[in-house]
Length: 164
Image 1 (cartoon, rainbow, N blue to C red):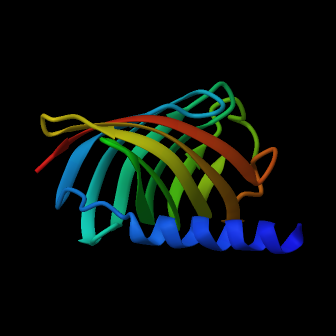
Image 2 (spheres, rainbow, N blue to C red):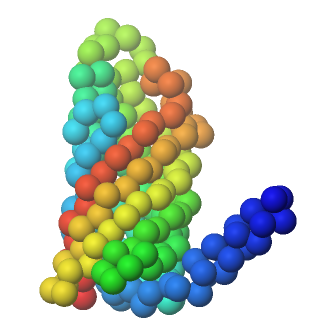
Image 3 (cartoon, rainbow, N blue to C red):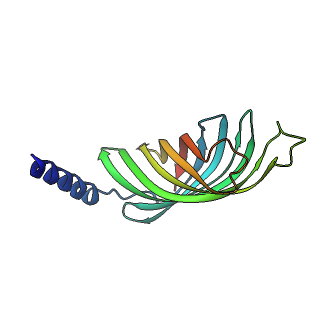
């Protein structure tokens, strides 16, 4: 039974690496959403080869407890599911600035932060130059997260991008 599971995992990994799809050279658009408020990002993706790309996002987060401005960079691997559907995963990080408007008299009402991020999602490439995506990006605070209630964020986003 263990051998059968091992062979299945190896076959799946080989299929994933072989079935990479040629992706658009450039994609520009928006990524909307967040886990604890509203967030919007201007998102740019650049193909780095067959099945690989870099993604750069510049945006802000708005919640009851804090406002943040951040920039993120991710390296992603893109794999074909079927027809125009792809799934992707990646790693990266970023930095930003946070402000706590609910703490005006507190010494700790903001500052710079650095985070590490992972990424996993699904996307649909339309026959026109448009991509819709839904992804999950967990972020872990590395530096400057002292004022946050925790160092971990479950960031969920809906993306719409124009390919060129």
